[in-house]
Image 1 (cartoon, helix red, strand yellow):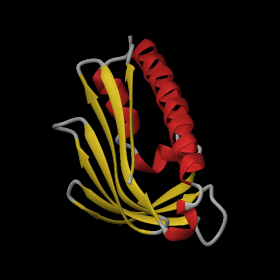
Image 2: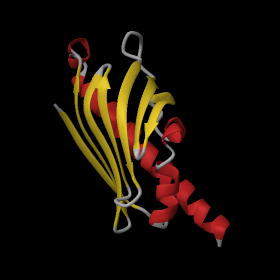
Image 3: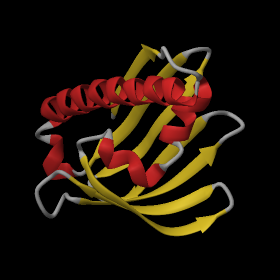
Image 4: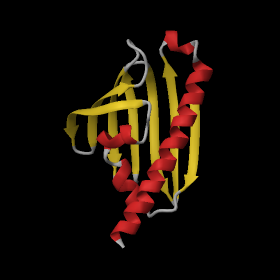
Length: 143
């Protein structure tokens, strides 16, 4: 199991950050490991999505059930089909944005576990930094 948690102080309002992270199809703008995210189904606060990952085939397709909770300012990706299995949770709380990964990889990718951890860490830091910057700009544009 790969477990990774990255926290960053968000110099933007929780609402501005939420506006960005709640748009699941916009994830590739921030998470460079995502080439695109396509919503296959929507039922209330749940989505079934197909994620085209920046990994070589046959590891480039991932299906996830996503729960978007505006009340909790939290998104939970539950990876159900593809190279990853497990969860990625993004939560905004008390001026902090937290990204938590708890995933297993399919057997061939297990060989590259340390590389995957590094890529997840780098991608998460990059995504949260860019996300916070965009949220700050949103705040300035609405004031």
